[in-house]
Image 1 (cartoon, helix red, strand yellow):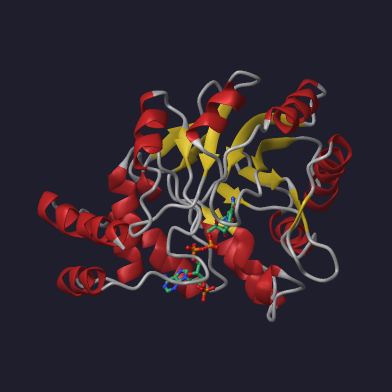
Image 2 (cartoon, rainbow, N blue to C red; image 1 turned 60 degrees about the vertical axis):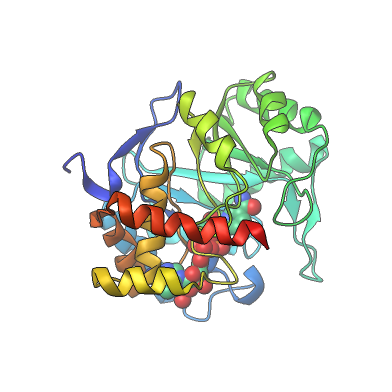
Amino acid sequence: MPETTLGGRFTFPGTLLTVHRIGYGAMQLAGPGVWGPPKDPEAAVAVLREAVSAGVNHIDTSDYYGPHLTNQIIRKALQPYPAGLVIVTKLGVRRPTDKSWQRAITPQALTAGIHDNLRNLGLDALDIVNYRVMGSGHGPEEGSIAEQVAVLADLRRKGLIRHIGVSNVTATQVAEAQAITDVVCVQNYYNLAHRHDDALIDDLARRGIAYVPFFPLGGFTPLQSSTLSAVAQRLGVRPMQVALAWLLHRSPNILLIPGTSSVAHLRENLAAAQLKLSAQTLAELDGIGAGAAKH
Ligand SMILES: NC(=O)c1ccc[n+]([C@@H]2O[C@H](COP(=O)([O-])OP(=O)(O)OC[C@H]3O[C@@H](n4cnc5c(N)ncnc54)[C@H](OP(=O)(O)O)[C@@H]3O)[C@@H](O)[C@H]2O)c1
């Protein structure tokens, strides 16, 4: 595929893992509330197969989506996995039967989480595992993560994990993790309207570390902005495509994992890679985050 396909390529630092900058996030494949099976299991399989056949080689998941079911759908849809497909998963949370989100951060819970991922994805080792800090929900909270990162580093030495990332973290926590192991990616909440990580992104870019925004389209509350709509209308594209293109322009270390349960939306999202935004349009879009920060 040409160098420009799906936003070009990115190699996770110190690894042999190279992916296109537009990937796919699998969270939307579970049922409502990220719980239970999808309403249309065949459609979920179709989305995954379409993504991979279009060149997506970076899929973000977790065994706590479903729970277990999303990984099982990925396995059913994509095994035997194509060469070069990088599946990134995360640990640190569990879903009890009341459907709540609870910490799972003891060495035993983290180790069990690795084995759940391996079994449900049908893999012998996991390419990249993010330690997902519970923090204050979708936002990070200061506090040591050393014990949990050390457990992941130990599982890496045992060959069950190839590389480690961190998620929902502060800059201090990234530095703490880096003192324990190599960190290849950071996955935090960031999009056109939610710009708290601007300084962190620039710092990671200087060091070649991937920044993978979750909720790139706003997540459970899709992005809505009159500026975004006006720009999209002017360019003759969809607002969500502009939001993704803005992220691709924002920094070369940003990798996209937009989530969707629909093949039509998937195609729109992948086509965002073709969109070139002028300096003037980028400045206009930057105003959305600046406005949001004031409120
Ligand atoms: N580390 C973490 O803590 C964390 C937290 C949340 C998510 N994640 C990861 O990040 C990925 C992305 O986040 P996300 O899926 O929650 O949110 P998102 O990508 O910001 O948005 C997904 C929502 O946007 C809709 N959508 C997608 N494409 C669209 C399009 N072209 N036009 C209109 N609507 C569109 C989807 O609905 P349809 O299904 O109808 O398309 C869904 O409601 C997840 O899949 C997951 O892998 C990680």
